Length: 527
Image (tube, rainbow, N blue to C red):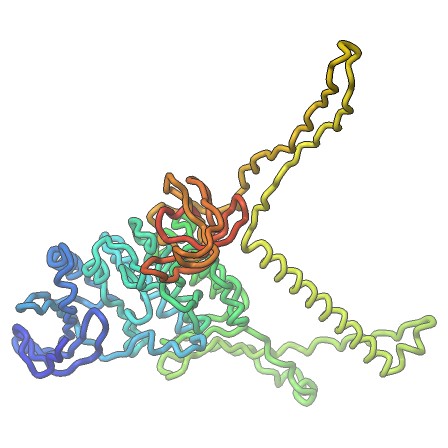
């Protein structure tokens, strides 16, 4: 897309290019008629060829222009000049939330303030039937205040309609923040936005997104099949109540999440106001555990009672003019607690040993070593168990029937010319293997993406060829019958202009390669 800086676009004079992405370029422009600066988002020409794009663009732009909320960037105008399609919005001197996330957790007070403003904007839009579909830090502008402004409402729907996610990871939404039902191409509602807001909150309090992988498609599969790591693994100082709010917002089942943005923000606010936290006064709120002041030194305790000042309480409204947050400060003037009684030394035969300092140190070291060994063994057993249960294998069972004893040849008494006869020994027979018992799984639609980590079903009537290596000329291992269930281990790999995947047959336990055709998605591990 050519740079439009210095050109006239309708009634707008393009002043400078602000940002450039794969689907749009943002410019700062001047509108002489109203004597104001605006932001113009010029969409890439490649989207003009999408079926029904112009109709969706006009419909969504009109719906977004009706949104009037202090935390939503307003849309002023939209138009098409030749092959240039653009949106005109309010120009805000600010950065984005993405620029604030540098790999470390943000201050808890600032986090709650920004998420509350984003949630208020989403709740306002949801009540009017508008779904954002692409909530992420780069779509949140943060001006001085802090003042959060949510932008790009409906842009994903303008560009892609109801299109599903493609193999390149480009589709309606961003993989790192995409709800499972949105990744599957299902109909979404406001709960998909709340899932994305939960992922954004996860990144703000930990400094990282919950799922990381080498490709966008792998990230999407993790959103669909894996539970997110607990945030406290990356930020041990995070309150447990806040962690529970994040995990509830990121439930795979939309019915298990918060149903409205108001419910989400109310739960987050309640979590940070639990006992042990003191609310801040001012714009940038900070939350610290409320700890009592240390006891007064002996010199002050020895003062006469009449010189002790009464408790002084500073009201928050007295500190509104201060630059930094003011706290409720209560000076504790109570007498120090009585000294703890000395623990008597142990009596009996161990008393001499206990009085030895080196014996006590050796006992403490031995106890610590035992605790470390028990913890290490526990972790090893847990890791082995998880690796064993990650890929369940149904063994092939061959049942042999017990042959009857070989009969002894007998001779008949008459006629004399009769020849001795022997009964034939029955051959052992094979019973068909039992129907495999599949592990618990969640059902996937047949048209879901075929990626490693899911189960698929053979639909080709003549069966599905399983080869030792990827390639049509490789050794044939077996022909898997129709309706068999396979587990995807790896791939896809391109060989002889065919895409090959590595699978395990859940009936026979055989492992091999087959072409990515004649199979459909069946299920994903998990309850």
